[in-house]
Amino acid sequence: LGRDIIYYSQLDSTNEEAKRRINAGCKVEEGTVIVAGRQTAGRGRMGRKWESPAGGLWFSVVLSPELAVSELALLSLVFARAVAKSLDTFLPGGCQIKWPNDVYVKGRKLAGILLELSGEMDRAHYLVAGVGINVNVAREDLAGEIRDAATSLYIEAGRKVDINKVLTGVLKSMDDYYNLFRERGFSPIREEFKACCMHLGRKVRVKRGEGYIEGINEDIDFMGNMVINTGKEIIRISTGDVSII
Ligand code: ATP
Ligand code: BTN
Image 1 (cartoon, rainbow, N blue to C red):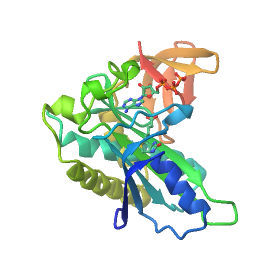
Image 2: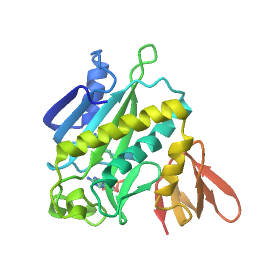
Image 3: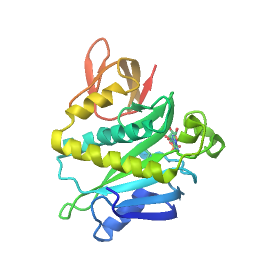
C-alpha cells in the first residue's frame, strides 16, 4: 500500500475524493493513498462529522479485495489493530481499541476508521479505507464538543511527531495486517485485538435503535461480532456504539 500517494493541502473528504475517482471510471491502482492536510467535510461512522484540522493525518487507501461480504466486515477490525499497533510506537503507554475500529488512549479517542464500498455491480468493487489520526493537533484545535473526548499524539507524547513517519508506519502496518488476514484469516489478529480491546470483560451499553442493551462484553467472536452477556441471554452484535458503564 502507498506506492502512489496523492497529496492535497485541503479536500472535503479523502474518502469522497477516492470515490469520485472511482466513479469517474479512472483506473485507480489498488493501494493508492489520498492524503489531505485538512478536510472541510470529514466524515465519521454512522453519518457523523469528523473534525479534521491542519496537523492531523487524514487519508484514504483504495483497495480491491476479493473477499466475501462477511470477510469485509472483519477488515474493519483488522485495520483497527494495524493502526493501533503502529501508533503504539509513538505512545509511552500504548493505545487501546474500542470495537469495532476506534483507537483510544486513556479513555480518549485518538483515531477512527471509516470503510466504504464503492463501484458498481458490474464493475470492479473497491473498498475505501479512510483513516483519521489526531497527530499534531493541540487541544485548542479541537472543537468544543470533542475537546474532552478526543486526544492526539502531540497531547499524549508531549511533543510534535513527524507526520510523514506516522503515515509511513501506519501504511506499512496496514499492508502487513491486510496480507496476514488474506493468508491466515482473522484468528491471529483476533487474539491481538482482544488483548488491547478496552471494554473486553467490562460492563457495556450498546445503543440499539431507540433503546440499548447492557451486559458484560465476554468476547469478540470469529466473525468480529461483539458478544454480550446480559445475564438473561447472549447477544452478538455486528455494529453499534459501545460505551463502558
Ligand atoms: P450527532 O448529530 O449524532 O451528535 P454529529 O454529526 O453532530 O452527530 P458529533 O456527535 O458532534 O457529530 O461528533 C462526532 C463524533 O466523532 C463524536 O463522538 C466526536 O467525539 C468524534 N470526533 C469527531 N472528530 C474527531 C476527531 N478529530 N478526533 C476524535 N474524535 C472525533
Ligand atoms: C469514525 O471514527 O467515526 C471514523 C473517522 C474516519 C475519519 C477519516 S479521516 C480520512 C477519511 N476521510 C473522511 O472523511 N473520513 C475518514
